[in-house]
Image (cartoon, rainbow, N blue to C red; front, side, top):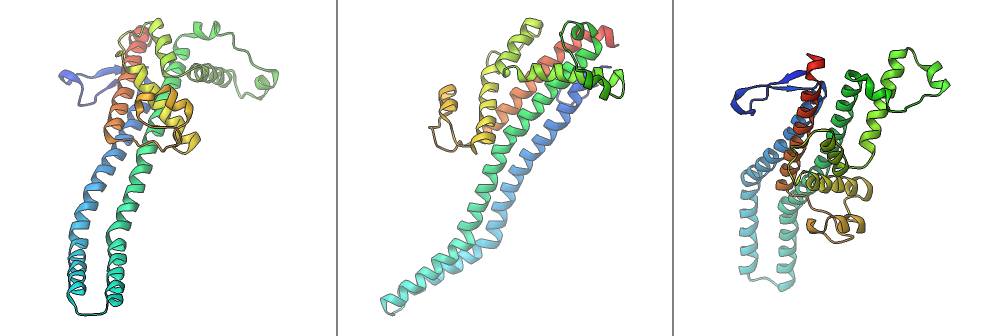
Length: 270
């Protein structure tokens, strides 16, 4: 069954026909976008709150600091007063800013991880859709099952679904974005933008660094992506514009891929 995508940002207000796999991708990326928007709104609210609640306290501290400098007291007492004011200023302003910055960095690192997972899940699901609608693919896949798998399966349908899932997972696991795009292009999906593979490879590399090296750039990452602007051993910093660009390229990749599968199989599924 092929379904329609009624997103309001489609040109001419027309719905695009979509595969069932697209629904999961669309829902998950909407959640990622909402997370990004929540981060932006949270940042604005934080600064508004700081201005409302902290500004009067900072002004009071500045007045105390000015008074301590003009009072005719011994130098040691003046230094003690200044140190106390500096400590209080740090607790009121610098500590919340540091906590906010740490939270934003965590969000910026995990959005790429979620995005990669979402795209890979779509790619697996759309190939399962293809396997279900085109049995000839599975017949030529040269897959086999063990006797134990046959005996342990509840039905032939369950066993077939497991084989379809395994076949689709093998496609995802065999290489990364550049290899997928090369295969899909040779299959007939020929409208990917020229930079799609490169941008996605950077995104997948960032995800690997975040998950496997705690966000610290490895020699492999720096060697593969020298234009990212990070040196070996340094934490990668992800900007908002990079996140938005990766979200756009993920949508583009899935849009072109899904359109190809719809065009190829719509007559069989309508």
